[in-house]
Image (cartoon, rainbow, N blue to C red; front, side, top):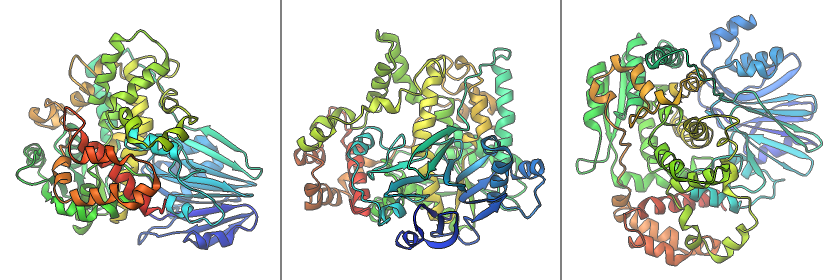
Length: 570
């Protein structure tokens, strides 16, 4: 997708060139520049009713918006979204369905708008009497006026979550716009945030479980159809789990073109789910391709892949995800569907530890619940006292508590039931800041647009109408989702428990990544940065310090962070 930069304030045009952008528009004290653009794509500028805007816009309901607005057929997605705002304000933004990061110059303000679920990203900062905003964090890193550096509290957040779950970034003084929000940057330096969409718990008790499943089915079909490429073959990333399988089945049912599916293998001696993905591919009649990812490929591509991300993601599937996107592009596809979103929207296994905790706790405060959520992640949260150096820990003593990132969603005034509170949390943290952003950056870097039907706004709204007992039924997770598509898939797929993609991280770190991990994490540059205790890193590299072999996941987090920091010269 095209990237863009915007500067607002006193004489900002020269700043865009230093940020790597090509100036394309100047209006009312605002300068707009474009970064790298995919062939055939444009970020604007868009103009309507005295407003000027720039953005990365993909609308899935463009036809409906065009009819509502009476816009001409040649009106692009960006122009449609600007027209919708000009006529209806933020209600016009809420009526859109798609992925977008939009900046509007309006009088003496910049309006920064990020789509409902967080499919696109948007960052901003202020230095002197200027604002700067960009869809690229790296561009803001090059802003000459911005005196930035490493944001240490964000390091702690990343080591806890394996991603950054809120507004903070690893660059001091740079913030990220939250999904479903409009941030107003004013000339006097003040900031105002408005919410144009937030999931609401509107439980519908008039339907039984099958009724909810039927209502959900209608939304799933519409969401998938909206995301099918026009007059082109369809590509789907297929793991063999229920989420990607149902997207495959719906794409095969509604597309007028052949469907190609893509799966990952880590070699014959590694655990895999190829039997399940192959079963779905055969059942749906897709052209199926299995991409084998060798450990050496992961080692060779890891640094470059991490550098593509605006914020690091401690997910060992990053390189395989990129290789899949490149395979999809090599086969001539410009759009690829995926099954991301089933867990955060309908209730996957990450919620079970929290439900067990709730049965035993005697402290009803949101803080206690948020602390339990942090601990349930089982990343590096409990290891921070022995992983971080004494100096780093001392600097973090005055930092805001991590629980603040979760407490807004773990409140009964927003969602009355615990499961929905957890789903709301997962949607607004991991969904918007890990899943969607990782997929978008990696697919876009390969020249492909990734689309996630299960993150559709109307699918999410429907999910929060379903009483929790139809999502988690006994020990059956995502019951209503499975029931909604039971007729489309083999029972083996619908009724199998979720196992997740089993990535051989431990084997990689004992193999081709062993020397790289040792050199990077114990080398001079890492030591001079002063974040991690070398003794703890050495212990993890030797496989010590845990009853279960979980050092691999922890080392992956630290290694990912180190590579990202180096790519940003931090």
